[in-house]
Length: 485
Figure 1 (tube, helix red, strand yellow):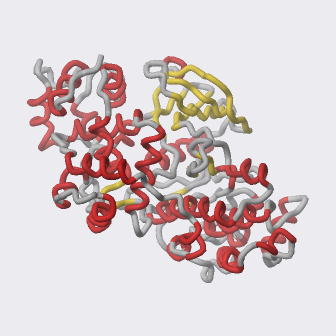
Figure 2 (figure 1 turned 60 degrees about the vertical axis):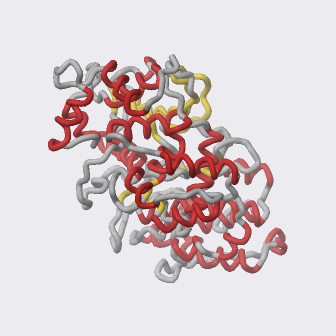
Figure 3 (figure 1 turned 90 degrees about the vertical axis):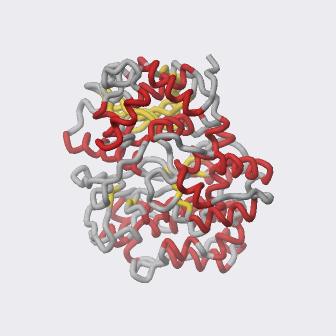
């Protein structure tokens, strides 16, 4: 339903620049823009999407056979500031850590293209699901609203506004009946501070909030877009239509949302009331993302979070057994968990994480973990302080999604030479075949005070660097696993 007409190429912000610097193992720091050939590591299987920017392809990682998505953006005719916008999108994808946000793995750049490698979702767009059915039932719409609102609540609390929310940018994980939504395309997204006002016209006409058209807006513009999406899900068409963008903008600014079409006669008053709350033209009076998250229409109808109790108990046992020997191991297992956990396991872990996350902030407090054990632990004895000591890598007092995923799945990951080689390559930022002191510091695995201790444990030949054999032996030694190949 339309393309994003403007993407402000001039706005960039240092993500997290206002926060205290913490040395922590972070797989996001392992994602760098490589000048190596994209085709050296991936082979294209099929083109799954096209646009003015280039193509989205299903690709296969040559070493592992894992299927990914590659967004290949043509940059040969782009201005410098436009290319910078793409880099900003990459930084935002690296920064965000939520199961409902598409996961980034690699970035490759040559003279003609930037290739952004992400997880592959095969279920198609929410837009196509609406078109296929004409309109959705309230229960279906509520289920998808829960996913959308959870994602945006996390983003806003992380200081990111999306600015181009639409059904085209929400895709299903797979084609199963209970497939969850993931948010993609962060080309219009920016970092913001509380109370900060934006002025650039950004987004897709049907979904743009009136204050965006007027050039004075904040993150509540995303709430308006969610309201438009809900309206479309329930009736099959947008509330404000026109033959030109100016005509659409005029109706957005002046017309009131109406429910006069016959399709609305069977829709509950609660659903219509919620749409009106989101489509209030005054952003100060518009429903907040927190209020939206707890809205009874969404919560009484959305029943997607039902973890399998047997799997949940097994996962919680893994959580109690997770031990972090050192930051190198923690970072390696986080990388392997993100890259090699099956889609089936990821769906289960996402449901668990979001079931535990009662306030929807995208991270788990010690009280929420305790509540999860009480509901699904089947009598498991747990030392919650010890769990946080081992799982909370960045010491922020919460277990973030990546930390939860790593702890829950690490015992089930099969270690192989291929996988460790790929992890090593990701840690070897300059690609010279060695992990250097500066690379360890950059990734957050060690700082000056601890780096010599780590090298003493791992660097067996004493050259001040870590080669592949030393890395492999260190990981196997600390985990107690045997190599499978």
